[in-house]
Image (cartoon, rainbow, N blue to C red; front, side):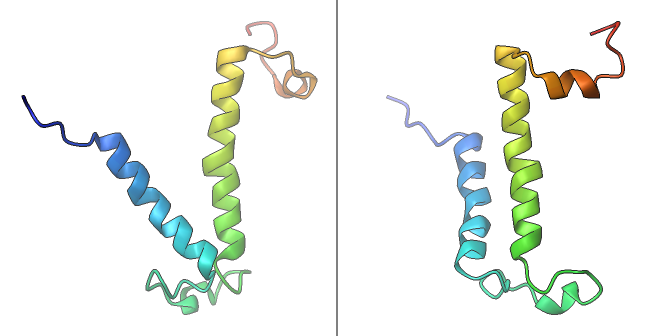
Length: 88
């Protein structure tokens, strides 16, 4: 019987979660080897706020999009944002 190796999805899923776990422990970037000095010209003093922004826009927004595509809910605020209402 052929031995099955883990799929790419599970490998990448674990790989993506490791840095997130490290940022939760310390938002200074020390566990990832990222110096805070790269944030000197940005409005952030550590990696907490950029990490939260990435989590919301790269993590939660696609989940909301998938939910909306599957269930097709009638969201009033989404209808206000739709500038092609005659087409969609």
